[in-house]
Length: 471
Image 1 (cartoon, rainbow, N blue to C red):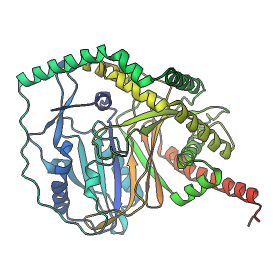
Image 2: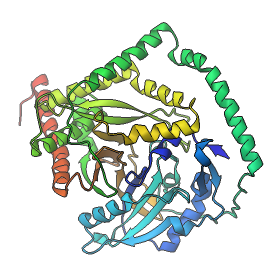
Image 3: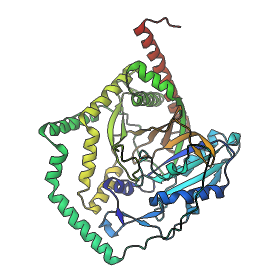
Image 4: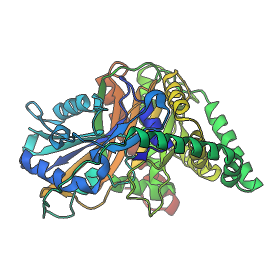
């Protein structure tokens, strides 16, 4: 029986009826759609490689112990792999509407925390695979979840015979009590070791100073006036849409301006939020949208771990700045500052400190922190790099992939970015009651317009620098 990490337990505890905490994706494939039985057979062949997908979460009364993973004695694959179709004409509008409804539904916490939907009826004979997996299982960056196992690098698909799996028996009461005593003893040892832990993480006086500077920088960012209309109560329903952009174009902008791809992506998102606030009549000089930006902490040898190894930084998106290139430079300088002060490492250390708390306190603290209205963060944005080479499933090429990011209490919007082949997909999750379809259009147009504006100015800057004739 394996206990959850502090971060994984936090994702589990924070979920409630209006805040499902799964991440997901919608992959679109060339046709024809496979037989549903073939898809089931593929899942049956691949699921032994990721045992977590046949496990359920076990909790104890009053959260005396941290949640743990145990085999599901009643595991049924066909409960998790499902079948649906979009109504005619099967365009992107119909697909987005169906996906929004499916993504909004919470996963059954009495079963393994994932689902997959084969979706037929798309225009041009195409089909899609929608996947959902709880954030306490994977972080979307590690890449070793079940979806990664399903794909191949060519059209050849060899479906192995399913294993003869037998669930491990649940632990006895006596073993749970013993485990609980072991957990309690470990907590006491951790508390005794807390001073040493802090010394080890902060290191030398210069390391402690660096950590303090990072906290001070975070405080400065929190002091900047932020857009307030993006915060508020949310309901159980979601809107979800996407727009795409050329990866080559983004890289050209990056090279011309001497910034990073992530700087360009964040500047496009900044443009979208600027347009939204302008449409609402709320855009003022100097205002920001404060975004929580996840950062991967995985090393090169940790890509195959099924758990969360992420931290996060707070980034002020400068929506109140009119000039696009100035916004890009402000974002670039801010990200450099965040890397230099180690805010992500500091956030990871705070998460580890929570591990010293009793599980019951961790549960209460996590729920309180995310359910109490807070004006500090207005959005979640995440950029997940994908492969530059084509992927195949059951012999069909994946032609597009769109990510899904959940939104927490008091947040109306989240934007996830995923790159595949030569395209970026900017996918927007919104609370149904707080953001209208028309405002989603403003956001998607704002992303495209923002990239176009930056691209034109970057090209002019490059021409002015090398003296070439403008055509």
